Amino acid sequence: MDTQFIFSIVQQLSVGLIESCKIFLLTLLFSMPLGLLVAFGRMSKWTPLKCFASDKFLEQIHILQTAQGKEEKTAFSLRAKSAFFLFKPIQFVLKVFIAILRGTPLMLQLFAIYYGPYYIFGIPISMEYRFTAVIIAFSVNYSAYFAEIYRAGIESIPVGQYEAATVLGYNKVQTFFRIIFPQMCKRVLPPVTNEAITLVKDTSLAFVISYTEMFTLAKQISAAKTTIMPLIVAGVFYFIFNAIVAFVMERIEKKMNYYR
Amino acid sequence: MKILEINHCNKKFGENEVLKDISLSVAEGQVVSIIGPSGSGKSTLLRCATLLETMDGGDLIYLGDYAAKADPQGKAVYASKQELQGIKQHFGLVFQNFNLFPHYSVLKNITEPPILIGKRPKEEVYAEARVLLEKMGLADKENAYPYQLSGGQQQRVSIARALAMKPKILFFDEPTSALDPELTGEILQVIKELAAEHMTMVIVTHEMSFARDVSNHIIFMDGGVIVEEGEPNQIINHPQQERTKAFLHRFQQ
Image (cartoon, rainbow over all chains, first blue to last red; front, top):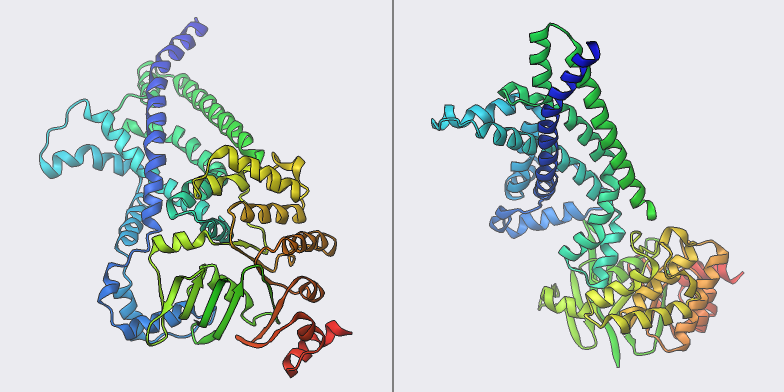
């Protein structure tokens, strides 16, 4: 009887596991490329206000920027001026974006994206929107983390790689996609694996907007049958899921080990 | 014919003038060595010539094409991106740290730039690359990755990579400084062979006897200026300036 009960739990949770897998795969699919865009924006050096600055100021800034390691106390007025004229709007916006997404709970972000359209714009929430909201919240949240991982990866590539490519005549796009990006991918694999594993466990957060994934089901069965067995089974499922993720990522790492 | 001409080049890092009114010209087939103490500006000069740094003032001319032209105030005004892209095809640079692309095999390191940038037919580029590798003594290494090679082998690949673009002039930025004495010899040998084939080259080096043997012209730089230049034998063995004498003193013993 006991084994039959466990078997029925496993059967019921499997349905939820498929939902968890969907969240996991779709989030990775959207957040990984989105993270690259966020990383580009975060590294943007575009200074649209610079053209309004005076030549004298630009001269002073040029001297400061090219002064090799000489740390001099910059006059307050010059600092204030550079804060204004050298303002990087894209970088600023993405810094704020990342700060908010990393600085607030994912649970809160799920609420905001699910209920936000109704409370702010009065748009009625449809049943189908629930899954969309989960995917949007997860993808956007994870893109912030991926962006910072990518940035670390890109910035760790030696400057000599850029110089060699430049001298050979590669333009910026060619340099990035042929020389920098492949090397970045190899370097970011371990932290990306970390994020993927965290994501598997985070899928359980979808229950807060009553999206029925594995953990939601486990809790429901557990409450109905007054037993913790479903939670234990769910734990085992998450563990196996992550073991598979770790195994796959390790295989990819090994595949990229053909160079150092 | 003049391959490279630099007129009145000035370069500052902050308040620090690293290049002061440097002029030099390199004719076809000429091998010019630039020697001098660390911080004398030799590497910066090479980086300006290869467009890795921008000059503050002066002209930079390759085969009559202006990469940068001084305006009436002497300030260097650079050509458009497109024009510079074309001018880049005239020169190659061999780095101190090789800077090979680690994720490419030896053959791909050499063949990708001519195919991708030079838009040349694949078969031709591959055939030429194999000839170059043969010449560098690396015929059996075409499928190796850079990390599997010794420093000397990596540097030979990077020379092959530069040559595959068929540059009119090849720059070397201290090509042996990252190598031990044994490996240094093999690189110097390769450069000597190139000189024998009348490859136009500018070499920044600390190897005095090599500079004397391989070059037609030696430039001694210190403090951002050309202190002395001329025939190799004259500069290395009979320097006129006190500063040059002091620098070469240890070498002559």
